[in-house]
Length: 409
Image (cartoon, rainbow, N blue to C red; front, top):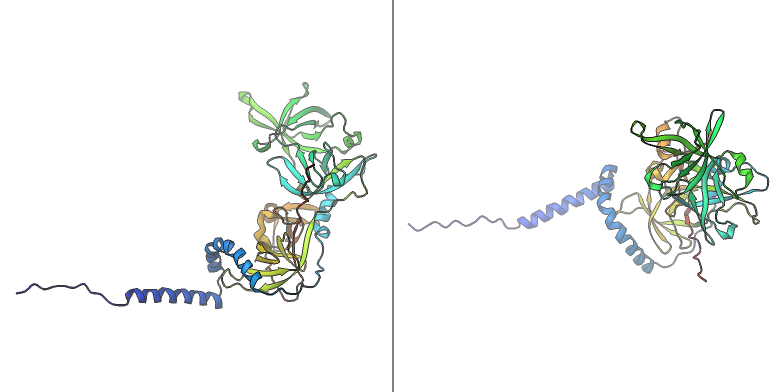
């Protein structure tokens, strides 16, 4: 009997049917998401699409700008300026020290905050009559001195910066003692390197700034605070150090006040705010999702956010020429890049402080904290508000202008 040959069973078209099934499932998912959008699915898909979109967005901008004919410029925008926001007005109210004889206060906006390095970068310099070693304060708090001054910028060395020596006055009930602090920068709270010999330090003493030789005498009348005395380490083993827990006013991230004897015509330096009117080009992106918008500005520039009737609708993620790709975001999505204003209590709160104190009946309005090209003090709205891009809203692109480059002689 001849042997029986067994041939493997092959069903033609299995690979083809599998491709059809996968493609059909993908089309069904996209159609379902388009008709009945799910925020959870959109967020999940956005995590995979966003890295690719950040690369493709500039390329698509080039193709769009090349393929589309130039459009007429949009009408002039009329929304409120950032300098009129509740945050900046409260900063001015809380931060301006009392008038002193023989001194003037120069109000200077902060361009960048680097607390770990112990520095502030100001958006004014020699063009605003600033000079090295001038005292810098905010309200009743001592901040530091001008370390470096350029033509259009200046750097403040905070008293908490590494190796910065500051005279202190440790106030106790009915008596005070002299001391000297040394900043530790990233390492922690400033150390108290020397205390008047007859003093017996205790936790909780208030540390005030003490002037050095050459400082204006009227400054001593302000009682500028540094912080609170504390002890670090184990005193039972003789391994304890006295430190000052610095008090940092939240408003000092927006503007500071510089003491000056001789000044120019202006005493208030406004931030270099760039703004231009805009109009929507693409109100729905089927690839990136429904939260993405494409707008065209009247002019090209350092656009960082999109405003609608003066309120921030979203962050600019990419731009090419006058085109900008914007991702809409709720106010609470800004988190640590936002601050809250309590107008009743006259307080400026960080995002974490505002979230802890938030309730549905007493929500606090949020504003941009500033930094990374985003102007400070732009209104974000109330927590929970949805960003809406309507047809009747006045749209603007806004950002911060970079200072002019220094010309080397």
